Structures are given as structure tokens and as C-alpha cells.
Image 1: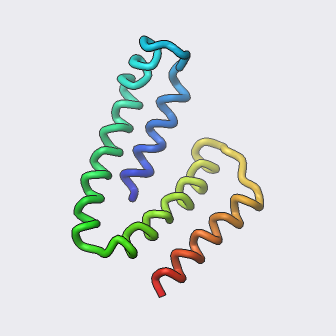
Image 2 (image 1 turned 45 degrees about the horizontal axis):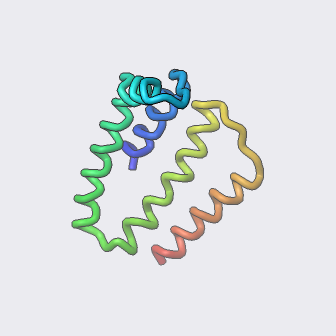
Amino acid sequence: MILAILGQFLLKKGVIASTLVPSIGSFLKTVFSPIVFLGFVVYGISAILWLFVLQKFPLSVAYPALSLTYVVVVILSVFLLKEPINSFKIAGMLLIILGVYFLFK
């Protein structure tokens, strides 16, 4: 879960730092920029580790737990990327947490 979040943040930081315009050259330059490329690598490692999680836990338990990454990403985006937060985002996060809680009961 942590690697997936880190991968997403690296992808976001890499895209912010690039000048992505609609052209093949610009797209390839962005994809192979060090930060974006590292984001893909980290996200890929998280996908491989996810296979081990799926091997050990039922999908009905593992997948809902993964939805908690949405909550962590919103919180980190507010602090690290200075993205705005409002009452609807907070309510959405609380609903996700409540939903996961009920699924684990």
C-alpha cells in the first residue's frame, strides 16, 4: 500500500515538473524522466507485492483494505502538494473508513 502511494506521488511530481504537450516526443520525455520512471518502477513493485497479498488473503478482505489508500492519498496531498480539502472530501474519507470497518466486522 505504501509503495503504491509513493509511486502515485512520484508520478504526480514528475508530471508537474514536465511540460507535457500533445506530442509523441513530449510524452516520451515525460515518461522517461527520472521521477516519472521511478514512479512507474515503485508502482510496479507494489503491483508485484500485491500478488503476494492476494495469495495470502481473500480478495473480499484485501481489496477493501486497499481502498484505505484513497484516504491516505487525500491526506498526503493536502500536506505535501498543498491541494485544497473541503467538507465533501472529509465526508468521503469518513465513509470509506466506515465502509472498510463494516466489511471487516
